[in-house]
Image (tube, rainbow, N blue to C red; front, side, top):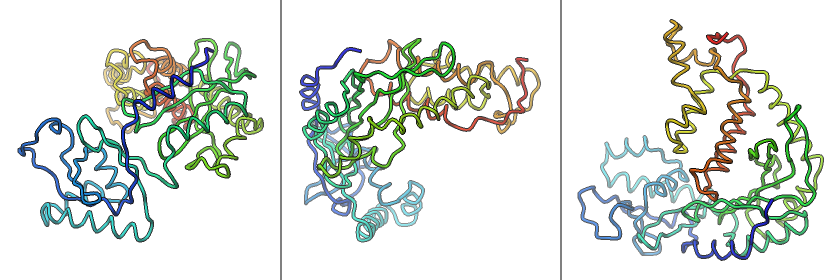
Length: 371
């Protein structure tokens, strides 16, 4: 593995960081929504149409952040629609602000509102449980974490907006390779750190050596997430990579599900799930149909006269094993030349694939057109 230049990455993250302000949710007052026909001068046009007031200043907020603000106060789109139909936009405004105030009395919530200077719009939101973890604080923590655990940075992934954070992959100077089956060797003691203003998350990165496929897994330990980098808060996460029994337990779970997947064919329902997941990551249709050929194989069953009830998809076998499907997706996520090497979709799709592998498999008395 090649070691990453941390000083250069630190500068890149600092350059990409947009300004932010930490406020309590009840201090964010909803004003209203600009109608589609309203005139908005550049550079506002095409960005936010939701108007909020913070500390006396009105801000345009994009739809994603507006939905996140509603989720914090448990306001669903359906509820908002009902209120609007009954009381108009004024009713929605008053109800939204009432929920924000009432909710904060029971459980105060703080968020970082992240601005996009180009559009002068609030384009990102990060919940803050204790205090914002700045990029400088993260990299200072990182230096201590690497030194203590004999790890080194190998690559990173970052979204177009630093509000989504940074994922940094770490290799070990003491590599631990373990076997699942003949020809199935994995490097098991690499890690990732995922940072944004609200928290740092530690996860494992398993690498299949035969093809360099990666798969990510959140460490199942309460101290694998920290929301402050104060010394007393980071002691637990600092020790996790040196905990051999925790690593063995995690890999044994992975190994058990991998062996199961090698001996079980995927169902058409599982192909469908994976096909839809690939679509959500904007994988092109032809590639998606090759990795998870749901439409083709479902049509084969229909042509053969099988019940068209979608509820039966979990009882129909696909042409490939769960392991073959899993490895096809992780190979694409790890090695495809279409995405930039720093595209955060890589790690996100690897994580989705591992969640898929760890699920309970569909029932075993399948119908099988491929027999």
